[in-house]
Image (cartoon, rainbow, N blue to C red; front, side, top):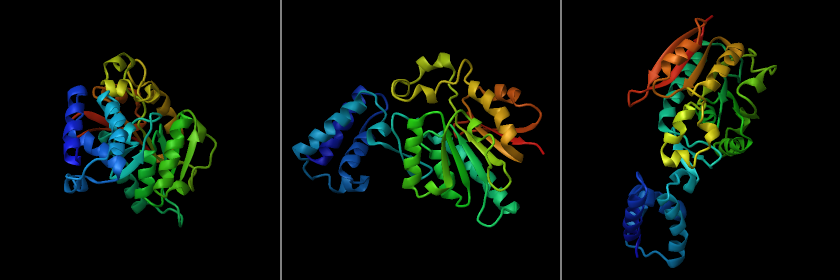
Length: 295
């Protein structure tokens, strides 16, 4: 069997057994094992597959056909143009979270152009529920004067995040802290002003009654700690909001990813001290609450 034949066969096999899986997954698995990119797979499609290679590929195909997310099989996921290591200890970065990233970058760039930071200093950010570190590391990569506090309740998740910071060369500007929401930052000196400029939070927001209704690849493989947000999905945000108020500077921002239908509840939780904006994702669904601390 050559590469082209294997890709066709493996793709068909996965499609028949796992909704959403198919040829692209076969290409990703082959590329993960061989190091060949997609162009090379097509260019070298006539090359024969050795029995040893086929033996290596087979269990990975079986895992995907059984519903395991591709990112956990390959151990990586792309986010904002960067590759991130992932493991079953962390939620897989999702495209909809790029809306939060884009808004955070816009806010921080505006602050950097309008505020006089001391030489060598820049905005101070907290990424709460950091998981793989996708948000924290991307901010540090794209804004080279930003200092980021990366917080998670899971020590295993923080180990993944630390490795991602090292991979992307920003470990010196990201501090990893195990703890509950923003509580570990109480009493710390947070940059030159002693306050945070922005808090980014992609916390669990799936309502507990909806967990059994999630797609099998999410429900069975991704960490429930990173999914279950309580009865209406917003338990952790209710606790985070007053903590963020205490730690943010005047004019600072709290960005919170939510699920469809949760914006109204979030606006009722946020009182008149905040200026609130709700942004929609590319599918037109409420996805991001932007709360600015009024002066």
